[in-house]
Amino acid sequence: RKEVEQDPGPFNVPEGATVAFNCTYSNSASQSFFWYRQDCRKEPKLLMSVYSSGNEDGRFTAQLNRASQYISLLIRDSKLSDSATYLCVWEGTNKLIFGTGTLLAVQP
Amino acid sequence: DTGVSQDPRHKITKRGQNVTFRCDPISEHNRLYWYRQTLGQGPEFLTYFQNEAQLEKSRLLSDRFSAERPKGSFSTLEIQRTEQGDSAMYLCASSAGIGRSEKLFFGSGTQLSVL
Image 1 (cartoon, rainbow over the protein chains, first blue to last red):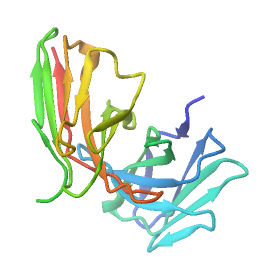
Image 2 (image 1 turned 180 degrees about the vertical axis):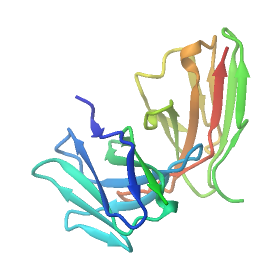
Image 3 (image 1 turned 30 degrees about the vertical axis):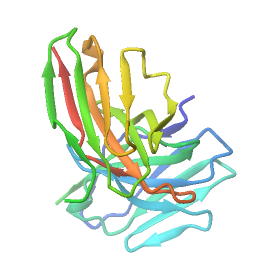
Image 4 (image 1 turned 30 degrees about the horizontal axis):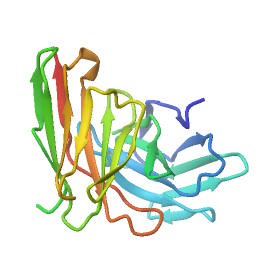
């Protein structure tokens, strides 16, 4: 089983829609989780950290469910500029482990 | 620009040739990472340095791959006797490594094409 599993998508949604991505992880000892965003032909950049209590940053909400070993990202009121690949990440020993990414395409 | 810089941006080489990539991390960052990314996949960890010490290497890193960070600043990644399967984006990242939940800053990567 892969350490981090994501639905690769693509998720095609209209502007203004709400979209949610889930990611499952296999290592129950994992402590820290993140969502990174990667635009086409660009490097990954940190979008937000994921806390057990859930956290929100504007239109973005991240949740962690330790019992079921998954994290989620909710994007409300999607914008065209949200189109990108969203990478689920957990912090292993001395490194970050990345999922395969979920491609989001927001349509006008 | 004070971000992570990588050179070259693109490298095309013939199978069997050696290639070397350079990474200059953010100056105050003591941790440096190399990742490899192929189309449709997330970045895969290759190796990690804390200052000049290489503390971990992935099993993905065969003996044809070697990385150095001689003075704890810039790093080089060399691939000897390249194979077509080495074609990928090679990403360097650095972090300050303070506490947990450290943020990685990535460079723009070196796109390697092995013909």
